[in-house]
Length: 341
Image (cartoon, one colour):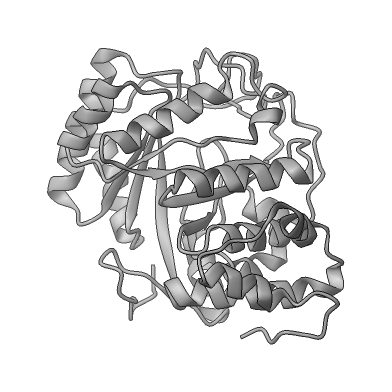
């Protein structure tokens, strides 16, 4: 594993504070993001101490299904499915239950512990919502996986119905800091997203919420996003790195480096020590050959494709995890002995 190197900042103090439940303050958080590249290995070593304390060397796998694609009335500038996107993507209504079950079987074969079902749109129509509940029942009956759904903005009644159907988790990103979200989306606001996360928690469901980095946010915005997630005490935190898709307003954005992405992941681990932190969309694009190093602060990845973009093969993911000295996590939380997809 990575060994700490001599540095002008004792990053292990940040790890000590995280392990003591204290977190780090705003100025120290900024120091994580602004550190010189020569300090990156020391940062990763410190973040790994925290990650290992809570998660050992296990890597949790999620499988993401785009169960309803495109035709979305929202104007999120990063999204190929939004109403302002001209990206050439496949568009379709909610998949039939047999197709959803086929995808769940694929997720199970790939040893995913969580099956994530996503739909496009602001909020699910009543008929669509009932079909989603039916699909959740079927998946839960057939497979020993956690089921997570991302369905847009939800109300209290919908949250309680999802809870009754034993949905394990609701995925709803804050996307960015409150001060920056208006530059990303105008058809809904930060408070809409925050209200959905709080409503989900009030219904007794666990929450998956994170953001997308690389959309012109400042260092302070990144820190504020991570602090907001800490205050909400969300269970799972996907850290996405913008995939600049042709046909979207953010298609020309290119402001991330592998080193920047790794520092962001270290920051999230220091501020969210016990949470599941997932390297989500964009890891192949921005981390590139440095993907294995991201497993030092993070403990989770998506296996397979994303919503409208392809990920690297499951075989590559398995090899990456094994070669870096980590082990895959079974749905019950144990380590998998057989790592062949």
